[in-house]
Figure 1 (cartoon, rainbow, N blue to C red):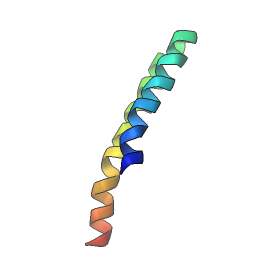
Figure 2: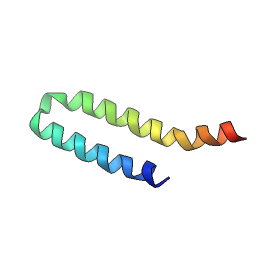
Figure 3: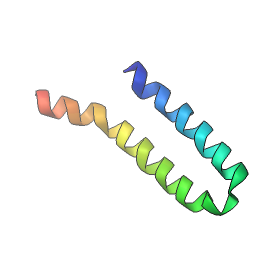
Figure 4: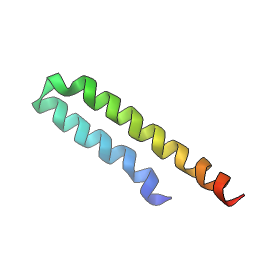
Length: 52
């Protein structure tokens, strides 16, 4: 679970750096960030469903 918690800050940091250098990528970076955070948020629930 520690890895799942550390993903959001790392993704946010990378996204922020990319936006600084390439502002046109903002839409894509925000979309990818939201998708990744959504998947990370769903993984614990999916794992519980598989083991139950």
